[in-house]
Length: 297
Image (tube, rainbow, N blue to C red; front, side):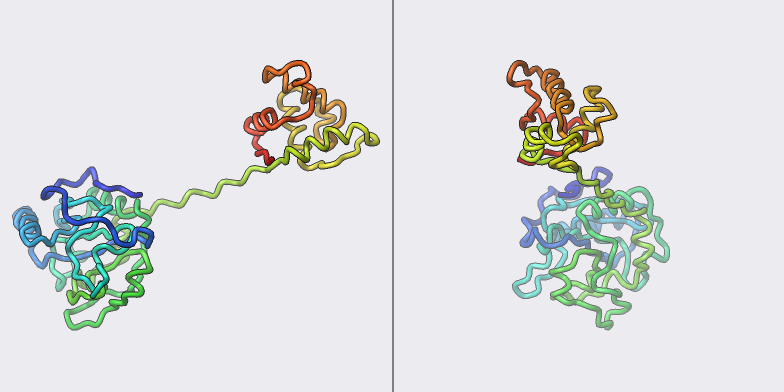
């Protein structure tokens, strides 16, 4: 789950604007609106109150000329700025449907004169925290009221990303106008890079290593049973200072390796028959945890 309340945003209203999302397993999205008003502090106050009075609150109110930011309700619940499309409750589509009202007019794209600052970056950070990608699934935004923009319900319900009000099915508004979509995303700073995939740890089968510990000592010198897995154990025993480097790569769980493993068991507190050099689940798992391999049953 992403950010629910943006710390940098002021609060408007009582914090209760909608309800639970209908399709929380669907991709999250952000929807851009314009208030069809002037910008500035006076408009911020009057429009902010008007949206509450009309029960048409978005999640966010943003002033592109002052970078002022306010939030009406939690981002994990719905807002009230869209009309339904028949039985499709557009406000409640996706894991999140973050709606932003910008103090601007569709006929004069705000990206032509805006001054985005740290609060806009905070807004984009919150949007991205929900996994909203830097894409516009419905394509171009409406350039005029009469422009036939893409309002596909199939796109809306299945694809995460950024939308204009002009892309919402069941709605007839054309805001936010022909804003510069590239500039809008760029002003939020670079999207965080996905974490690099972590290499998977090699796995050792307890059954294989135990079988090798019982069979290999009776084989001709250097004989092996499960050499690849045994080498991982030998390498760990060498790192512990229990097995000479000369015997730590042969893959044979011979008598010297058994002696070294018994030394490992004693280090764990085992004694007598519990430190006989035959690997057990607990001792092998602890060795693997320390030296980078996992243990399968």
